[in-house]
Length: 394
Ligand SMILES: Cc1ncc(COP(=O)(O)O)c(C=O)c1O
Picture 1: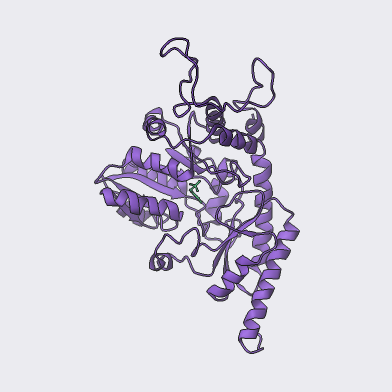
Picture 2: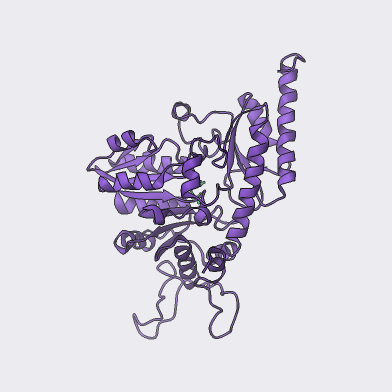
């Protein structure tokens, strides 16, 4: 079955009994039992719920494995993985470019209980090898990364990590299973902020963990129930609805992102564009090899001041200023003051996350409107700079 067909048919038969084409929302906390402990596979909705189980089946199918657990947020999903595999004294290796919330979780929750977080350029094989030790339990990567859209060679990182006895976790939020299948190239665990492209409409918060090996999955499944950060049946149903158009939406997002990257790349007020689809992107060749599309996100550095960047992101017509990404409605964000503010300024500067970096999440609007809106914003920045220079063109 092709991917788009699976988003609609995998694990989603019409409802037996009524023939309802769309699965009902099992909005219940508990289930009546025939005798104590005798039930139809569901006893309490924190432990399991038919709507959530259906979503887990679909997500597992789309990532090409047998096991998925859905959580109340992407960070709850990440927390379950970290709790399952890290104990005091253990080490985790991460790249410099990692979602700010992941960094905060590692450095403010797991580091204080005695875990060591090694932040190295995992794209440099020597640096990665040097960072790995007998204590390394996890190598945690995103690709493409948030917010600079760096691309890491997942297969190479998995080979190095596995040789050192560590598991590799890939945050596949940006690429989505439409464009990237991490398990096929060696990943042990995939995590998602389902909040983004998978649900796709900016109307819920949700996360997921997927694993191929039942022994790797078992402690995560245990923690889903034991710590209880589960999503509501209604939110699971919304994601099931969103997933049916995942491929359609993501192809459109990517088409819009490519048009925007091209338009920005030639603009005099744009210092640098980060988009894996550009031949000038340092990860372009790897992206071509390990992805079937370049994703829907574009970031760029404005050639201006922080105030120019703030004015730009605050006054777009079609790009709402907001955290998050991956919805049908376009979003823009200023990572240094928003998504990545939890990373201290010197550390942001050290790994090149500048204060004029702008991150765009093009939605499913028409690309002409989106490009026009951005060019209009850049023209305004140009006018501001001209005024600031006393009328001289800068
Ligand atoms: C790449 C990535 N991973 C994980 C998360 C966390 O997900 P959530 O916000 O659903 O908790 C985010 C949120 O922005 C993200 O961008």
